[in-house]
Image 1 (cartoon, rainbow, N blue to C red):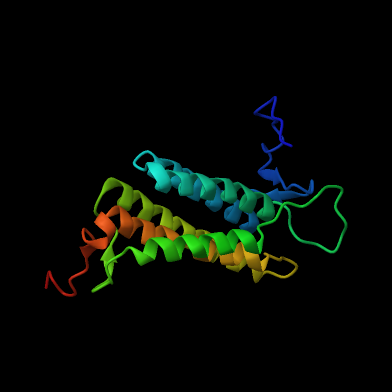
Image 2: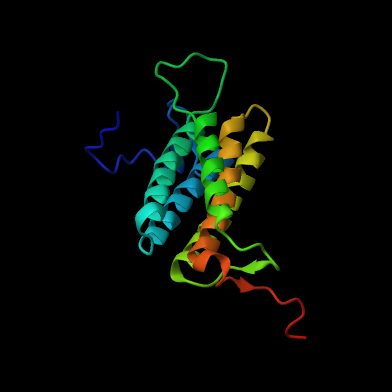
Length: 190
């Protein structure tokens, strides 16, 4: 499906980049910001995986693959025009898989007694960072979807929303199933 023999093409030297449809967009285009933020999210998960093992690493690996699907979805804007290729898009089954994972991880956690600070183990801190990048990706995707003539699929929006929830519960799991969470103490430094 993908074959890259040459890494640089010089086609982006004018400040544009190509979508999967062949359309050129400014690199500063909001859709390209969404694609780039999803790429950044994927890279933060790669950093988190340095501290993960077992089922956690397996789950993060699956999510990283899904994020490439999401990037392809975003790089192929939905239009009413027929495509010459099969459009790769995030589907409801990927959202459902995240929801199952959230439920499984959350079932093992201590109930929250306060807001959680993004700290604790190295894995937890990396997962919290990824969670914040996922939230930013979601905000950018929503902004794209509100622009005239732009569409972002509902499964793609739901996926990135659920992903931030999954990363939150996984960060808590990485803090000894929530027992090692670093809790917010309101007004502690007044």
